[in-house]
Image (cartoon, rainbow, N blue to C red; front, side):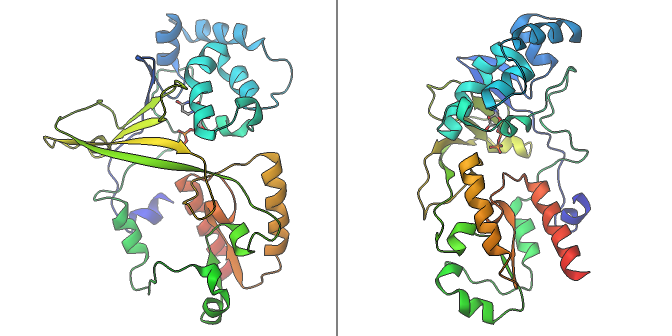
Length: 300
Ligand code: UDP
């Protein structure tokens, strides 16, 4: 995947290490020894593990939802300060109504390592993501501001195969019902400061703060400009027609999705791929991997 994207654009050495801000207290993410030390004053990994083990006894048996999963991974203190508020505003639902897997995205480490990811390679495209997209589409006719689902027959007639990356329920004109998504609103501001928050991503984990995170763009590329741009990220309800950001993979939506998959399997010349067409909370690398294996399968 790394080699694939690096054919198109060079990546810098950015490593994501967000900071969580809970009522003005700052904690390192993902949950690691730096977080545990700041929170409890513990010094060794054994002390941290003992603290978490004690708090974990609040949960008996296999975790049934995100709340139980989170407490069993990191205990009640971290759940309360760093997970509950953030998660509930992001998803607009109680942690007891959310699937456990969402939180399994986050590593828990008994080392002093603030790298959010475990991947060997990490970075931001030098010159921005547009470079990557431009290179991917080089030499390909692009038509914009058109809805495939308004004239599917016309578009299907000009191609042997269609790769459809829109919402799967929209493809079938919502005939079985609507899948739910979460939306986002962004508020960007230019500040006459050199360095606003000292990190690219600061998460606001308190429920009362209406945004989930503040992005300070220059830190993705080690910018030294005299001014800075920040973006506040507000989670939002989603309505059809708006940009869909996150699939809400609860049981009810998953069931409906699988009914749509049964219909999709009958569409012989259409490949359904990506976050919306597969109704899956994909990371960028995973979606590239999935696309590459789909191509390998198709061309074999
Ligand atoms: N999360 C959290 N507190 C944080 C960051 C993340 O509880 O400070 C949880 C939350 O449940 C969220 C999930 O981890 O939905 C994934 O968050 P991440 O920010 O990695 O998601 P992204 O929006 O970047 O895909």
